[in-house]
Length: 150
Image 1 (cartoon, rainbow, N blue to C red):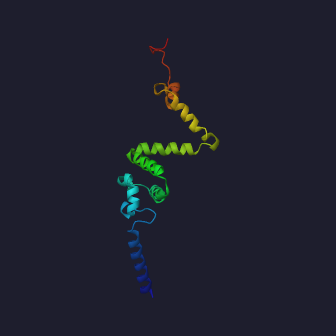
Image 2: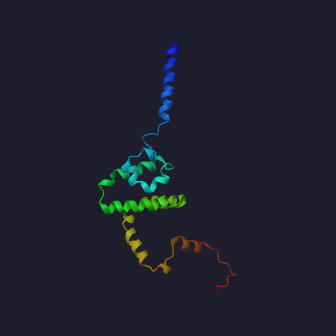
Image 3: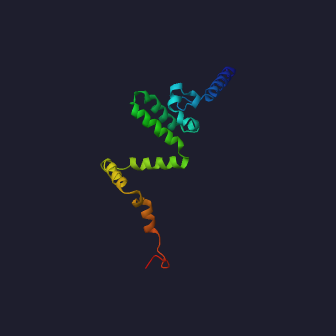
């Protein structure tokens, strides 16, 4: 009886070990994608195996719905995918942070963002001053020895 239990335990461990060697269904590697998914996600090929499972799943979802999009939407997604792939890791993290910040803005205020953005874009580039620059200057201590102070 003990030998039978031991045999079942060993068989279970062997099968579990073999199953663990297979890429989980939720996180397919690049080679595990079908040809259509690889073609659509080609700009991300170099980064694919280093991505987290949730990011891979998000991109697979985009690839799977890609065929239902209009040609313009497909082109926009391809351009954004390439732009994303070209970003450095720090730039990607900054983009994610900005997205999280925008997502947390109340819907009524979020509706006014396009108008604010258009106003900002209408300002000549040489007159634009990023918000963080204005904050930094106000916080900067003023020295009585500055030659520009009169």
